[in-house]
Image (cartoon, rainbow, N blue to C red; front, side, top):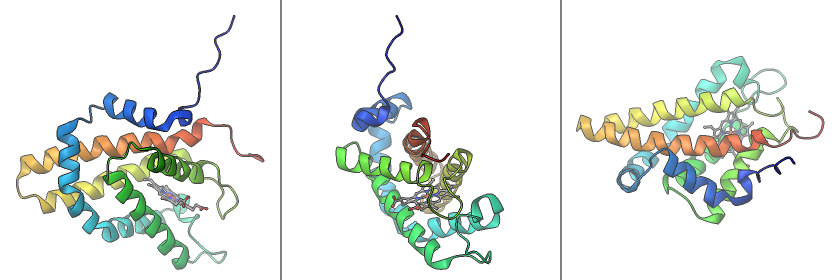
Length: 183
Ligand code: HEM
């Protein structure tokens, strides 16, 4: 007899997030560090999101989601996306485990893996991983500049990196589901 497939992690997101936090060792000291440095990180949200989107525009593989038919950057679309990214960062910075927020974050994941009806189609998984690396680098820069004590800034970067990779796992969940129709 074959074992039934385990349920998709999206069936219980609170549990998935808690388990991932435990697995990467995101403990109370890390959470306290993230909460203490969140205002500093969020104060730079605009610069962080601008850096990310400027980077996307430099590479054809990522730029194609943000250009008009004539190949010029679609500035209005980019401004909307920057705003969404800042909102995502604000939610993540709260170290969420409660239902409403973690399901909103699953919705963000699905809008990358499944929403095909836009220029460029669905977002390739490697770009999501690369984007999280860019986010880690940008946050490390903000924390290094804002915390004069090197040891403290290193602890802060370690804590944020754990959190960001828990949320990379959330963003990748959509890619474990069947592809949208037509793919
Ligand atoms: C760290 C990784 C990323 C995060 C946290 C992120 C965050 C977000 C958020 C919060 C939204 C709004 C979703 C919604 O309202 O449902 C969004 C939409 C979008 N993102 Fe990302 N994003 C990431 C990576 C990428 C990458 C790598 C690309 C492409 C190069 C991309 C392209 C888009 C596009 C095209 C939309 C619009 C989706 C739609 O049609 O509504 N994102 N993103």
